[in-house]
Picture 1 (cartoon, rainbow, N blue to C red):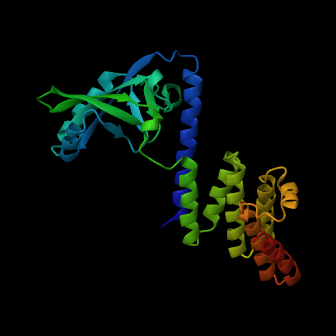
Picture 2: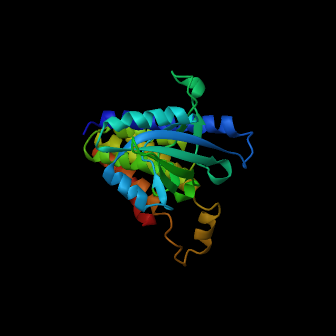
Length: 289
């Protein structure tokens, strides 16, 4: 597994997602939510895939890649006809109705930013979801079928993980196989993109662990200290006052993350053979636990 290629491809996909989203906001911000338009895509599918497509009329269809379409039917139809040279493929013309009131999935016209500016192309997010309607033959000689689709809202997406979660999972996998530099890049990107303090604390925890494994102890301590500050700030403002008032009552142990931060810092000082400092942090953790 080449972690560099996976990471760089991931960055490219993430950036392209972001650009489509920005273009969508710019191009469709002033348009009425009642407007709609049609885009087209001609492509070949295997006979097995086409048989499955016919069985799923009325159901949802997800495209697991970026979806390039055009507003010009003739262009897509011509492309579909060219595919007829392959006897193993069934040629389909996808006719997609885009109702602005029915979708929050970003898409954007890329006519003015592509090499071929004569074509009015529209690019959709990965995993855009459409509902399948009519499927009919439009050219019996060349075996071309028209498939009518309508875009759906993003609540119909079948993927369960959000983008940030996928990145975090990729970082964990690369970390486990010892490719530490790539997870560091991913975590740095996630830190820039998130405003969730709890997630930031989790990221700093991972950064501290990786830096410790790389024996970059000072940076590891710095990451865990940042994690500790965030976790302390996440406590209720009157937590310590309540702890003093109700010292005879066991408060819910809802802050083990603070003890964990102390313990992690203690481990690093222990590895550095700063035993007195290590002991002080272990004692702080023990008091909480």
